[in-house]
Length: 220
Ligand code: DC
Image (tube, rainbow, N blue to C red; front, side):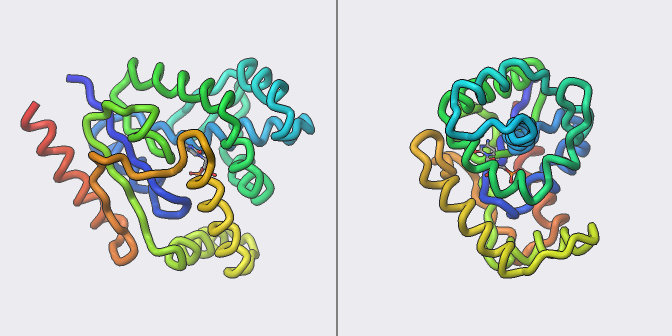
């Protein structure tokens, strides 16, 4: 039986943490599509390619070999996982992710991976565009202040000093761009199961999702 699970939601809702636990629990390949947009953004910025230079961004995207090694993202044999999480990339990525031609390239790649493997894929447009026929779709949300608090905590644990208000403002900005772009804006798929994680810890969310997944597996 082939299975595909989509998890969408805004920045900081806990998608990647939850998706990676769900992946190991059910032996699925975890595809973090945000990290793919981040990887293109990182390499474009290194090469001084602006998001307004659509042609060069797309040529670059087509020339790169992107793959996953567990939770890490590898571009042309370089593990860029840490660099893709930098503040510079975080602040620029929504602009690159708004390029329709780039989205087309990455969506194709994401579908190819899902055709080949059992996947849990997280992002913004997985249930609505990339895997419209996903077997199970989740839409994971959380209150915006709680999402900013989690990001703040994450940075603090890594020893990175950033003001809470700056993180909150960046999330507000990113939410706006992600949900207002013309192509594939962040949106709950009609058939997605919505989970608000504001007052739930990681295990509670994983347990909730696991019940739906187990029901699906039992009935198929
Ligand atoms: O989930 P994240 O913060 O790593 O995502 C990085 C950016 O990429 C975010 O601004 C939204 C965008 N993105 C997207 O447009 N479509 C996806 N499927 C995944 C991420």
